[in-house]
Length: 316
Image: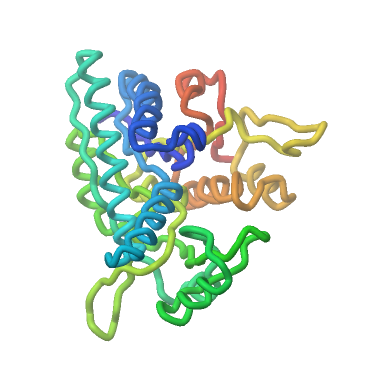
């Protein structure tokens, strides 16, 4: 069987800039990204593609707010996750299928709309911290807090926003299906946006969706370790991980061990909303039996696979 890689693509990387944020623009970003993934597949890798969906969920919530003013129902957060998983997955299916056709490669791509179990006892539910949706006035935010039970915060002087929890992923419910598809030779798009957050309602003995956001790198690391992937590849906006980022003594890292990654993390080299969760996810991957990890930008994947770019993280 081919080596398996889980490739986590950031949701922001699917949007070139504010002037190119339409659905066709996002599709063209996917078209460029899949060229590099297809090169990797041609080298003999089988891949699972995960992706972020933060901006896309934000757009959907904006549409929901506009619809409410026209008398339409609001869209729950878990439905936003499901909708964007399907839409972005479709973009990857379409773009990769076309790329395979262009190359004369016979491979099939499928999207698995993925639920990820979280624990309602996770401390994140007592401390919602992930801003979602549009900016609101103080009065609007207060009204939604009363009417819909939202947690709201003032966001850096720009207005008020809803915040939701960001719990850790506990179990990927469609994991067996994903693993079966991978072993069957399919290219799989899964755990989009970190997965749709669901929890087990003990009183009703059912699984229910909830308003939360799961970090896609943590979910990707969990999937990668559970299906025993050979590589966790986190595709991001930078070619390499750096220490002393933005300072005169900034240093790009070519290859580091897990212990070195932990050391740099403890020294505060990685920003909380940027590189830190990626490094934490990589460490989790290794703690659960992971073999190798790579962090780089999409256009450098080929060079990185040849050891000429990217930051490789390896066992001690």
